[in-house]
Amino acid sequence: MKILVCISHVPDTTSKINFTDENSKFDTNGVQFVINPYDEFVLTRAMWFKEKQGASVTVVNVGNATNEPT
Image 1 (cartoon, rainbow, N blue to C red):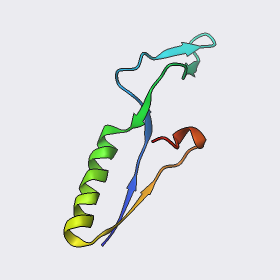
Image 2 (spheres, one colour):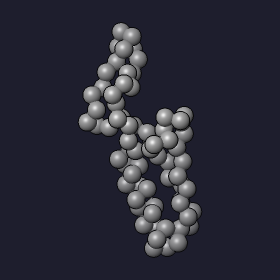
Image 3 (tube, rainbow, N blue to C red):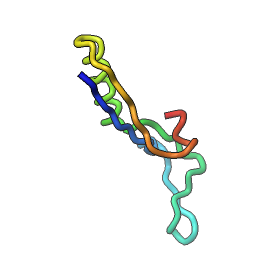
Image 4 (cartoon, one colour):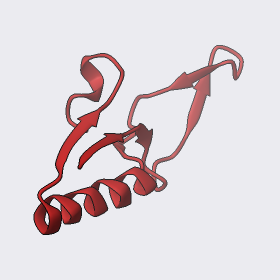
């Protein structure tokens, strides 16, 4: 079994969200980014299948270098 998991890089729900340029641009200063909680659940489940059934798991994230910590 081959499993593909797509993960998202999203702001932490506890971060304070601000906008700049007359409320038209998202301000990332001071915002903590994490893996989407739903994606984290799917990744955990995929790892379970890997351990129990020998599945191979591939994780994909589309973005620039700021996504690397995720």
